[in-house]
Image 1 (tube, one colour):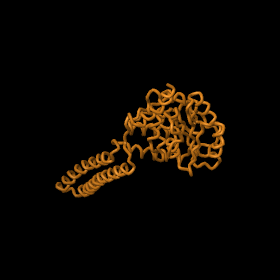
Image 2 (cartoon, rainbow, N blue to C red):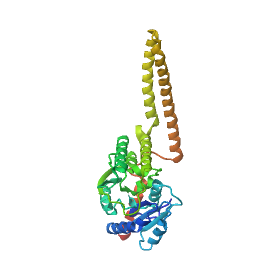
Image 3 (cartoon, rainbow, N blue to C red):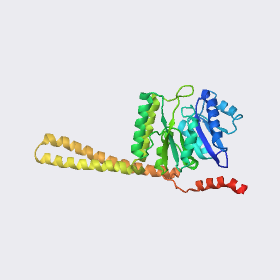
Image 4 (cartoon, rainbow, N blue to C red):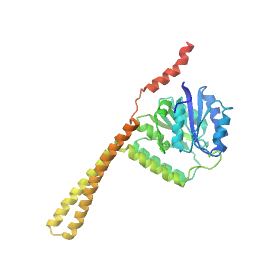
Length: 334
């Protein structure tokens, strides 16, 4: 996808929406009011993720009253991560602010995120405080998921799911897979980005029903486990499975010695179970190493097909291009 503009604006907001008809008008009003006070150059990108309740039609109507509003309509429901990625690719801001459309994440916190991002951070995450949500259904699973991500990636952000402000070039470099919108701070961190977080107020949903249910909780954990495995051991499957295989090999060697001692001492009733465990340990060790090699080859092939590198360069051409674009109006004025 190509962005709406060929020139860089100061701030883009990106919000995926699906069936949020009762929130749309108030959301756009509040975001536009905040952005007008913050910058003259901004765009409000709302991605209609296959809504069926008239959300997309209302967004188109509101463009007459809000010229900075940029609706993006997807052909069907692709999910929040894909909708967010579509918004990132359509953005042209030097800073990109990601927030939900139900107003649980108040737009009035955007200036604080931008202020922190101007200090040189690649991503600023809003840690939600004073949340009025179900403790068992959402708070406890969220804390467990955040803990697992911190342990596996080294990213110390305590709330991966809050509103965020990213440098625009980084947002547009990302190619989000389904579920990855849930841990953007960890994703940017493992790419070498500078990440921080600040506390922000969390409000109740403006209206309508939450799309978060018990099934979403299981989805979150599956996504987190996948990402943790993907980023552990420096992203090398061979390291994880190879260490497991070597550990099993050591255990197998010990069992083999115990089996030999049992046979030589005439304790057949002990020797045969030990022999079975030795065979099982040896087979598991070999299987782990084979899996590591196979996954390593698949990982390399996948990266080659997508031309994807698991790093980013601090002084990329995209950053220089943005600096050039922002400096052009000053040259003309001079």
